[in-house]
Length: 193
Image (tube, rainbow, N blue to C red; front, side, top):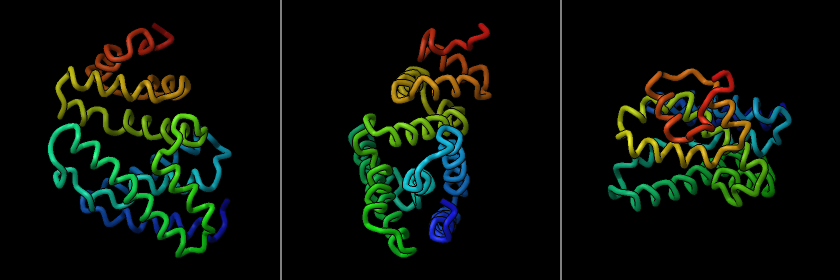
């Protein structure tokens, strides 16, 4: 796992994300990698690579370049998946990964066969946990309560029970915790309550 090739790929992913003018993508990638490693200490090399490249260079395709509304949002998300997968594939090819590994990384980034793919589930759990950990409060500020409750419900349904339990242990503001409880009902109660 700690091969020179793997380290070079991670370094190149990090260098690409370090160019983010908003300074978000490198810390995001590092946090996502940490969650994958916590959820699956024996994660495969393709899963670790996919985690680090999940949002590579995301700022290059701003949401504002797509039409407003749900259809524009969904198209943006699909285009981003392909963009991230191709960016990652280019780097992986440059550092000498074989075609099968590159395809597997692309497969994971694009969330093909989710939720049947076990590694895809690990990656989705990690993505959801990063959202709860770092983006929940910001999203609540920008989103009305009704819409936020629906976002939380959709997020919760994608998560495994283990990830749901971990999410409930994360620190969050009282208002965020109230919204989570409203969204997930009894599942949002901590065991101590």
